[in-house]
Image (tube, rainbow, N blue to C red; front, side, top):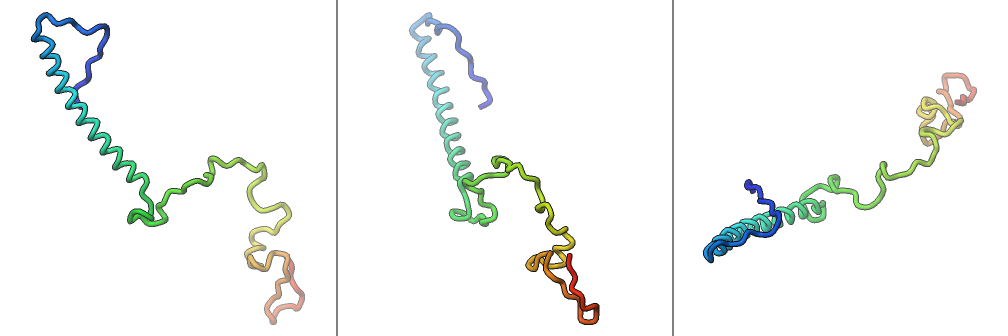
Length: 123
């Protein structure tokens, strides 16, 4: 729609002759047909966009990794617990956890190779 619609202020003009209302009706009828076509095109476009928006891996060829998360909470919506980020105070430093292995824990006894000293090592 390139034409800007006129703005109407005040009462409509009164016709001078009987032919004037017929001309107005013809012009309005043409405008109505154009507006109906625009509304139908927009309704079709909206339906296609809604269908695209509701597409997921279950009803399209999209992979599951591209599905939108429904429900749940996002990071922005979550409230802070008030605790600091990171490991708990007094826990082993990261290098000790890596040396001991995540399963063993940092306070477990590490045994050196048989060729080394026989004393157990602690972190």
